[in-house]
Length: 501
Figure 1 (spheres, rainbow, N blue to C red):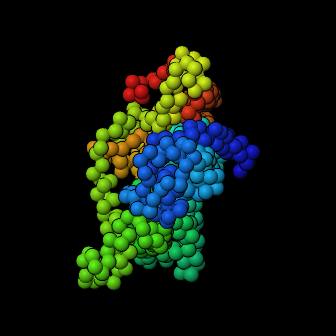
Figure 2 (figure 1 turned 90 degrees about the horizontal axis):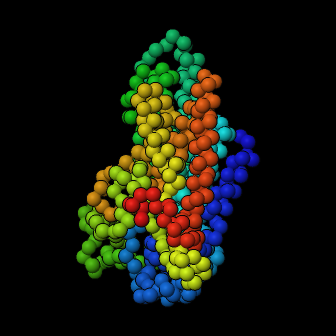
Figure 3 (figure 1 turned 60 degrees about the horizontal axis):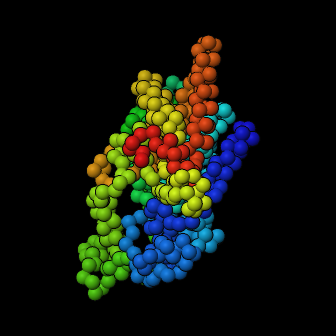
């Protein structure tokens, strides 16, 4: 692989995410939860309460007024540890430090998209296309400039998917090697019933389990990825066994290899997840930390009476958090039904500040500063169209690369369709955006591989126009992704649909 162009893409991604990252110097959107939780986690080992007015104090650089009383939170701790690391590195009152962790995650996401594209397509041009689209898309940029948890989920799930892809490339050769050895031992004409081997030497499945466990340690939605790609591994193992000529390929994959795959992936994910609660486990002040004690009367009895009190308390905490998640129906002005995510009907406004001439440096009649998670429309809508084409390709040609990309959508988007009445937001879609980008990249590859010279030239011309317009749109929208102060009329030019306002 030639590294010059991909390195340039990665540099561009870094500039777009790190430039003026500290603007605005105030807690925006849900930073009021995650940044403050991160800092108390870093100091107390658990999320703690803050006094009224602490957001304004944060803006002034006063970040030490937190208490020791526990705060009730419904997400695991890892993402907040990573946010807190940036604050510890650059100072808790430094808004660049608040967002540094998510920005680094956003840069690494671009890197992983390119690594996956290279592994899938073995083509540097397509690798640069995938990374370039991810680098300049506004949804990805915005989620890398506001200190929320979703970028970390995207990073770790993408890492797990990459490891599954590497394992996918190794599995078939191992089965073929086993078949060659078997035929050498028993003879070419031997046809006895066999399930084939149980493949335990699959280190990348262990790494995938680790990565998916890290994703779950940020948000529980990481569970969808380990479930979806665990099933994917089993299905592809069955197809590989059929390809090498094993007679009982379905039962072998389900009854023999699948249990091994489970052992390789799931225990490491569980241990990783429990370890992510170390701050809560090793301290005594966390919410529900001492719920179960000898005096509480809540200890389990019977076969589970041996479970430590902290583990029983942690389980009770999880039950409470689960009930909160499934019951969250508090109306929000920017909530978005998952059915509308693929058409970007209601992107999330993270920050908006309007001022008049002479205020805050405004030199126009009125000015606006905004951070809005609007994707580059050509990339997002083009990605949605590309997904439709991939579904067609999967039905007609059953290509494994198409199935692999679509599995990312199955894991990252489809589960949200179970929560149509819950309060959810468009920006949750960052977790499946990489697979929309890969879908576009696949379509680009199809066009570049057209054999008819006229059709291929026409396709390349269309792609060139698409690429130029995409870059121009990213330049046009960047002020709304980065909180730049702009004339109000220029902000309004970006509101292409009333639902975006």
